[in-house]
Image (cartoon, rainbow, N blue to C red; front, side):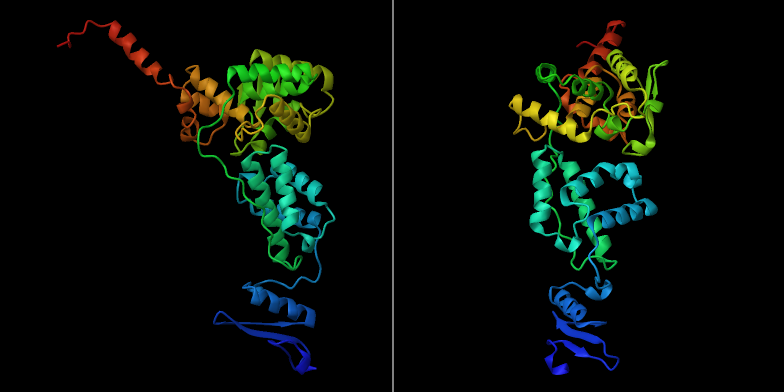
Length: 354
């Protein structure tokens, strides 16, 4: 029997199978219970993967089992602000919908992840959202691989380039065209959500996950709780008149639901946004994304002379540096300083002139 074994695999006295080969001048070895496991380990060794550190997969986990286990692990270790279950909800839903909850991990290949990537690009998802989805997909595969639930190392999804240039914001004429499109096509509730984003600077998930318990209509306040914000800190904002009108109307219609925007799903928002984007001839503008509404709010606050500390708190930025990067979009922003000094000078009788 021993002579029929593949090169590098031998039978031990205890009837187990020993893999023992040299790879790049390094000896790799491992004892396996079956010949199939030994062949798999030998294949991994030959490919440069140190399979001695990982269990041999006796079964292929499903995508559902792997992602739930991975998220539980992430929440348990709490390695970042994205360790609350609500932070993973939309990513989990997207991956399960596109790959299939019962799809086995061993069947995932390059065309599989490329199809997911193309889907998100075509739907207009932001580069950061696409890249974080790819990170979760790689993470759940690695989680399963290290626990014997997948025979192969993760198949990684392509990363989308995230622009480091100018932060795109909505011009006045673009805003008019956008709302004209939504109202003409009877997307009044989408238009209301868009206006909510513009007047609060909320992140996409902060609005879609907003609950009526976070809204104080009597005092005109809305709170984005830390469990739903990027930096884990809560912030309470005063409503603009239009936001108050929007929320009052929604409350009159749907106050029995805990969610404020229960009638709008993330997919509905993306679909409506992309149709509008195409209609306005902006399909090729990579920065014309929903998150741009948040940039627009920040830019408008700075452009109307709201001090940077207040703007930073309103936006929920982690630092003033994060807020300051928007200031370059306001050409006349620093003119306020000159005007202030002129006002001081005009009140004094100066004799400095030559």
